[in-house]
Image (cartoon, rainbow over all chains, first blue to last red; front, side, top):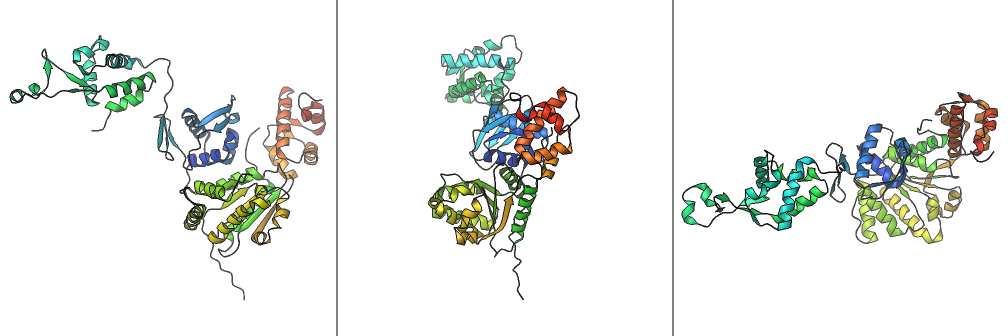
Length: 222
Length: 235
């Protein structure tokens, strides 16, 4: 009697995410039509498709080859095939994170103008950068915020993100008395040291309308 | 017209072949070959199966060498692509032994030349050492050309010949359309147009014509008089 070895090769049934399925198709077919993608990956709803494609487009992974009114008829080209792992995205926080090259792309809706909330901040940063100020008093920073009651809030934020910091005195005699005497004063007001590098960085973010990134500097978990 | 994947006769045959290969014991050879003319849905069927089986789908190109095949496989398996070919080969074998995956090679015709002999041999080595199923897809001549490599051909246990589109396939496609297509027009499509790509275009034109003329169904006579067969410019 002939016996057959019934040892089969077990192909694992791995869980593959929706984004991974779409990414695999895009990598194999660099130029693709959305309807074709939807035909192959048929277990995902349309809204999810569109949001993933939109996120990749905004993060400059996809390029439009042929535009059409119906999304299904649009054609795209994958211009950044970074690797096997599909980039993840968040529509709410508008970012794409790519594990292949550990790149984080943040995209915001392009505004014609900067959010008015940050206009005063931008003006103040420009003042610091253009005058190359290394030491300032708070009263010098206040001018763009004239008419606003929130300067105290802003001054606290500047200190949280270490844009400005108080300067310690070396006077031993003064240290023994009141705490505020430990820090440098001029004409009765504190003098602050300015982190110019950070100021330049923040000013660049604001000129690119990347307010959300600027916010992360003071929204730190403590 | 709705756009959906149609399970054609060829797709069903291909799917069955894959399941057959998966059911073979580990010690048996598990290579498959699909061949047929263009426009019969080979590549699209493969995409669907690769997606379903989580297989590695590679498209052979004229510039493939032994090392480029190994690098591409490493990339697909998400393992290190640095080093000599022998190192890459070892890593691939280890990876496939630990986590077996079906490998599909499309456009195998490009490797059926005397200059690409070593690439075929590498594929055979991977198959022999790991025991994973390898499926190849090519044009009509692929079967005859592979016969020359006798030791390679002996490992192919599953053959799928892609046949011309059947009437049932055309019927499935026409069912996706918004209009009703009569039997005589179905027969005409079957006789005159051998692939689904052309019929899709014709159906889209017919839909436009019916929309303009308030028609809900179409037969052969209306189809011929509509001019949809030759587009807008030819009559």
